[in-house]
Amino acid sequence: MYIILIGYMGSGKTTVGSLLSFSLVKKFYDLDDIIITWKNQDIHNIFVKNGENYFRKIETDVLQFLRSIKKKIVLSTGGGTPCFSNNIYFLNRLGITFYLHLSPEEIFKRIRYQKYKRPLISSLSDDKLLYFIHKHISNRIKYYNKSIYKLEIVNRFPEEIAFSIHKKLSIIYYNNGIIKPFK
Image (cartoon, rainbow, N blue to C red; front, top):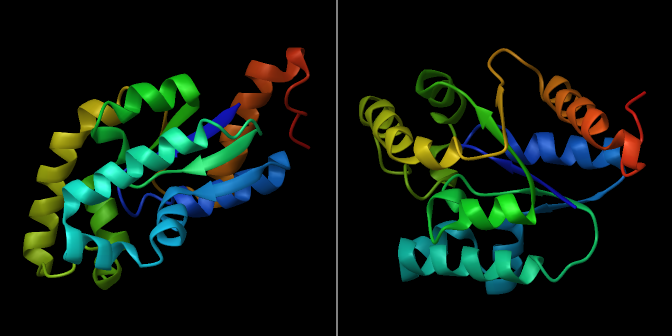
């Protein structure tokens, strides 16, 4: 069983995923980190040298590869992963998806000083960044909303979010003995 975290950039998928994997005693994978390892270059360079379409193809290829891993894992995806190549449907078949939802304004607060790390926004001024986030989310929300669960995460610490997911999983799977209850 896969536990998959989706959401816009800056929503905390990697941080929450790492905490959740620790509490569940499951292996944690970050999709971007896998791509970096496979291609031996960072995401920004892949975008610059080969373009977004090439990157999205790699994402889909990595997801197909991950299907072959028969372990129970926690996976954090890139912000655009569910929005291309029918990946959201694939992710929902692969495991249980959780959409970590934040407003565009909250995302702006989180990522405005980390633009250099994110190829889609690295060259945008603050005014253009907020507009970009609004527009981008409005295009992606239909995919994010197809996740199995949606969590409102504004004003919540990563530990609280991981606890909420663990608790939800405990309720769903405790009777089957798949996941131990959170203590």
